[in-house]
Image (cartoon, rainbow, N blue to C red; front, top):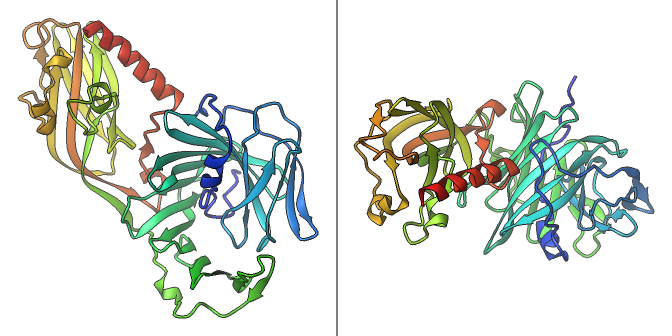
Length: 423
């Protein structure tokens, strides 16, 4: 029987600002899908001593000097611990609220302004439960966690985290799923930064909010607690914050997050990176070897963040035909553009501003007559469509397009090699 995630916001409140400030983000290879590329550290001891919680890691030579350690408690989603790489000890700076349910350890990886975190999840006694992954984005507001995954001990995905679009009423969302992919618990922060945890039935499990610079937390086990701002180690029983009502907590399930009229295209080489003078839009091209007879499958991505379908290129003698298939959560296609180029010089600013073509999906074109006998064709696809992400079932969550993972880097290296043959 696979383990279920016992709490909800495994990835929320990740101490990213402190992580960036640490000297030296490791420049090693990114984690492989399903877990980190380095060995999980062993926990020798975990527990509270004189009111301070600590975790003792075994000595390691795997370069975890900038590891970030945190714990999840029955009341607080994620509490950062101060980790000393020399001693291997991570300790809390304040008394923990509630009982520790999970220990989390991350190693950061930096690559061309992009950050990712790979790590591990342990139970309260220090036994390894699964592997953690997270993608981070940098911007004017600092570092933000954009997505995350928790894998159980069998390598199966059990938790998904997704940061919603700026301006959304729900700023951050995380959810835990059972072995059937059905939602068990979820949590979110609203636009004011207040956090709520609920089960799939809509019952509130926890609240974490700030009012008049005072932090309040609630769970069914503890009731309302207030953190004394003048004494962080002092936790006071209290009444609910003034004006608070459990009726104000939004029940997100079975609601979905919609992405209307978004761009779907090939997962390939971004024009904005390859030819920045052409466009700043997220349009891609894929060089295709037209000497290969038969079918070639090319992934399709939506909004440069989700893998949401595939294009099928079929070469049969002198003809080439392009078709596509989209995921079931794409509800509407309002416009299609298919175009073959035989040279980057054919791509213009005017085309990028308003993609258009007489070519049609499912209709073959002649390689000799229509593409000038080119051996390498540059495929461009722009589909405008609407899709959704269902919070209730993991099967309706589009796969993230993690373009800095090794498999995607290798894919673009292959495409660059084909593009050089065109030039």
